[in-house]
Length: 346
Image 1 (cartoon, one colour):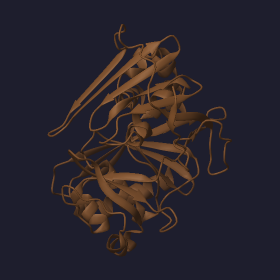
Image 2 (tube, one colour; image 1 turned 90 degrees about the vertical axis):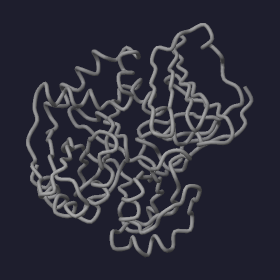
Image 3 (tube, rainbow, N blue to C red; image 1 turned 30 degrees about the vertical axis):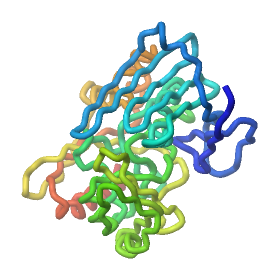
Image 4 (cartoon, one colour; image 1 turned 180 degrees about the vertical axis):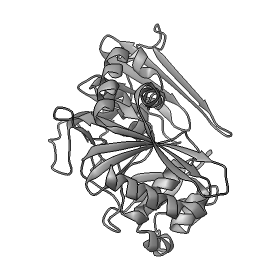
């Protein structure tokens, strides 16, 4: 298995620093784990005689994502077949990737599904959520896909919040009953109308912008400076925006203690609404499990009992709320201000 290329992104990912082989850890951010990582030209093929222990199929209007997870002893292989095609092989000590050229790069998939699989094996649950920080504390915002979660959390930047993660949050239990969230790579994904609202630029079906002078001029009012803007992948309308962390002071690059979790429920009413209510017990536990980053993969990984106990303990120490709010960009500033006031009082 000859190494074709070596990959070591400069910024840690959810508390994990990816290290190229024979590379010493670097002091470039707050890290909990170091994970040796390499791109290779062939992977061990132990899937031929094995059925997958977990499968996921997600069909959009113009795309289909298929994922299959296999296990052989203590080694796992995650096969991805989407706009990017390839495999991740990993155990608790290291990860390798074999990826086909062309299409979406493996970085798109490692920052969510692959790293979530690895973290779950370390006992770190991963939730489908955006993480924001305010006054040094972390807050998670959970909502179904395509319901405006990233749009709302981007609006929160204008109310003193800082971004930490987009689309996934790993909840690390540190000392005793303290839970911490670590930042992801500084990228956010927005639907085209939201991207235009916040940074003032629109992509056509094929373009990518790395020189966002015009965008950053427009975005200065919202503090959001963008280094690169592109489509998530060719057949998916969402835009991926790489945030310039040196401008605007909108990205929190340190870990923060988790203070509260918010479940978002957007209504279609044209009248303003922002009701924040407390959730406890079975309802809160069900929503957390329902919004696991890997759906029910934790069952196939043999983590169901451990995860239930972990989540139950979390609910004894972290407050959970439901925010019911009205749809419409015009309501977001007032809704965001209400969320800020609530977060400061939690």
